[in-house]
Length: 408
Ligand SMILES: *Cc1c(COP(=O)(O)O)cnc(C)c1O
View 1 (cartoon, rainbow, N blue to C red):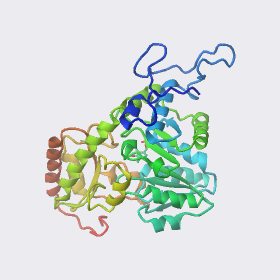
View 2 (cartoon, rainbow, N blue to C red):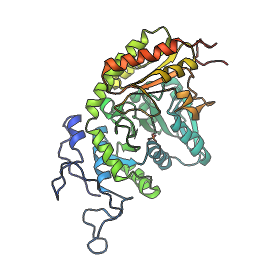
View 3 (cartoon, rainbow, N blue to C red):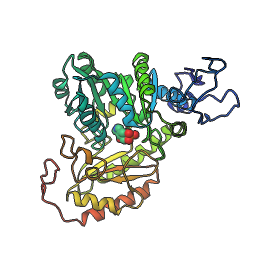
View 4 (tube, protein in one colour):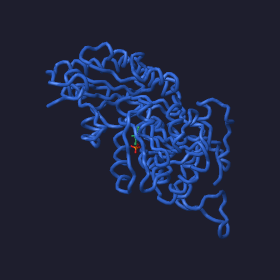
């Protein structure tokens, strides 16, 4: 497979690599942006005589290749492999590494779709899943079974509770047991956190979120620390075929160019909103690793550049107050997904995390999740006030304060 020459050496900064790596001007035309190559097949000069290694677009496509090179550079990995969605990327990892009887340790507050894929889909093929609180190293060590645990799956910060896991410490536990450490880096993005430098073997992304950054594409990616594992996952990318189209790859590549700027602004805005929510009596708990009172703050400060754009909080008066907050905002759009330039609000228990209801990963009904965008902070803060006014008007539900779970 041809490499797009990287015009930026590895020692260059993040923003420079995001704009240049894998994206040298087109040798034929000088086009400064990577062309979108829709061709499904590539002419050969005599049988087997490919011009630059491309034969058929499921196996390889120049636009996709540019994205894969750029993502590998940004994560500090050996190999990037792009997929049609974050879950397709996860599926490829699990099917590459696991066999019937394999055991996987997952966060007990993992993204609901990850848990559904592992427990319900791969569970049917004999993969066993143990959910564990990743902020409890003793519990992680106890859950890992040397010799049979194939993957220790880390998500940090988690969706939607913003739980923080110590990547370097869990890498040691995983490696001692012979397991591969996979880190879902979707919430932080490679700008804020680089798991491979902390000991991860594999990083996955839903590029739908911050990497793409404009809520206009669904995509996923795997980056591996070493070439060998990357080769095995790339084999499945071609053999199973969950590849992204060239236009989708181009959109993600375009998004990556501004990732550093966007993450700075997302972090500024989210920090201001988290600080405001922390002073609000109607809010029983704010989940944001940037708050010095957050249980994940110390570890997050060590392994993240800043704390990102996601903030969750629980309303004292229960799920009806959460729903009222979500219904009242005007700048924050009520919608699933996250990581785009525009602010979004949702109630996970009723929306993104319905699939984990009744499982160990069930999320509190009174939780509101904000994907804080890059709009003007004054407008966002005013909108949060609008939501809080509506939430305060709701009669409190009878509930168990210790867990935040409402008892009906
Ligand atoms: C959205 C998301 C996924 C799944 O990605 P898709 O692109 O929707 O398939 C995985 N992990 C996290 C943390 C997510 O937020």
